[in-house]
Image (cartoon, rainbow, N blue to C red; front, side, top):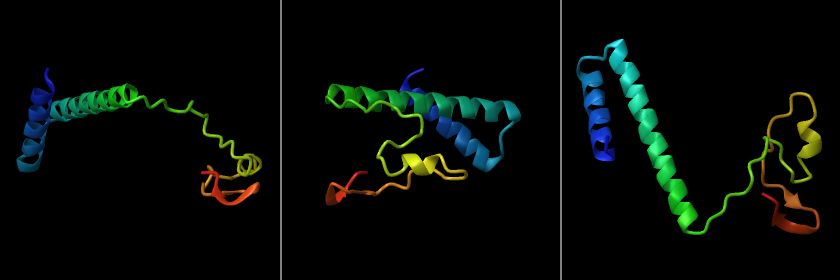
Length: 96
């Protein structure tokens, strides 16, 4: 199915949902079509970034390595790094 056909099908189901509702099977189809569409768009964005020479950083396992957050993340109930920490070596410069 082409991207154009995929969008047309998503739009058709969306109109039907607003006008008269969808059966459980149609809702399942709608969810799968949207999932396929998003997968396609993500792939296009990734390809565009790759062709532009952008190389993403390695994924972290949720832990921040800024040196400020690491000790705090181990504390009970501490959430993820809130960001915008100043670098002690260069005041005024944000780490992230």
